[in-house]
Amino acid sequence: MAQAQDCPTPHTPQQVQTRLEGAEQALGALDIDSFSLAMVDVGLMVPCLTAPPDPALAAHLHRMRGIELYTAGQTDPAHMALRAAKVLVPEYRFPTDLFPEGHAMPDLWKGIGVEDPAHVRAPLPRHGQVGFDGTPSRDRPSDRATVFQELEPDGRVRTTRYLLPKDALPTYPSIPRQRNRLIAASIAAGVAAGASYALGWHGRQQFMKDDPDRTREDLTATRERVNTRFVIAGVCATLTTAGVAAAFLVGPR
Image (cartoon, rainbow, N blue to C red; front, side, top):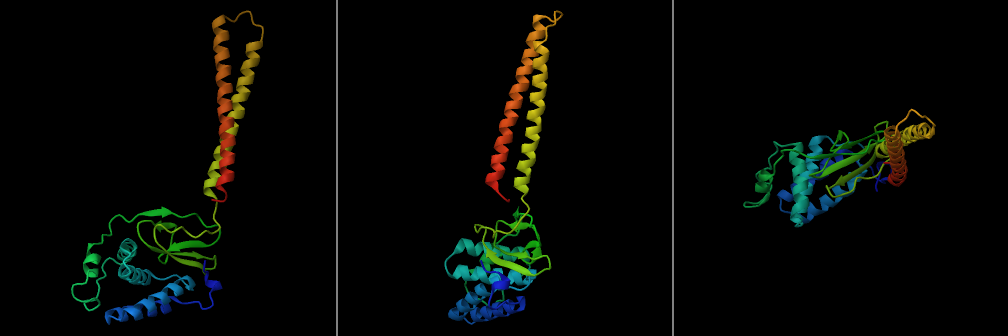
C-alpha cells in the first residue's frame, strides 16, 4: 500500500486538482486518449497526497473517476463514484459543453439521489486519526466510493486510498474495542461462575448438615437450589472459556 512518506514524488491536493482539470479539458475536447492518460496520472497521485483534499476536490475526483469508469463500461462502480460526488456537492451541474449532445452522463447524474447516505464505523485509531473525503471521521461511506486517509498525530498523511464499497479498509493500529468487549464479558462470566459455584458449595454444606428440624420438602428445595447454582456456574465457566478463545481469535480489533 502506498504511503505518503514512501512516495518518490509526493503530490499536493492542488497538483491533483490541476491534473483533474486537465482530464476534464481533454474530455470536453473529445480527446479520450489524453483524458485516460490524465486519469491514470491522477490514480498514481492520489495515494501520494501530502494533505487531505477539501470536499470540493474530493467531489471533483469522484466525478471524474465516475466518468472514467462509465466510459470503461463499469456501470455499477461508476454510479458509486458519481453518488459520492453528488453527496458531497449536490448542487453541481456538468458544463453544457463537456459532453456531446445526447450523451447519457447528464441524465445519469440527474437521476442519482443523495438521500439517506449510509455509513459504517471504522475502527478507532490507536494513534492519530482517520478521515473520509477530506473530513476527519470514523464514518466510512458504505454505499458509495470514498477517499480514505490515515493521519499521524501531527497531521501528516500516512495513507491515502481510493475505495469502492466492496474494497477492504486499509489496516492500521487501532484500539481493540471488539476484543476488549469480549474480555470484559469473559471476566463478568467468570465472576458469575465463581459466585454461583460458591453459593452452590455453601448450599451443599447446608444440605449435608444433620438438622432434625428440616422436612423432606426443605431438603428437596435445598438440593434443587444447589443443583441450579452448579449448573449456572458450569454455564458461566463455559462462556468464560468461549469468550477468552474468541478474544484470542479476534485479535487486535
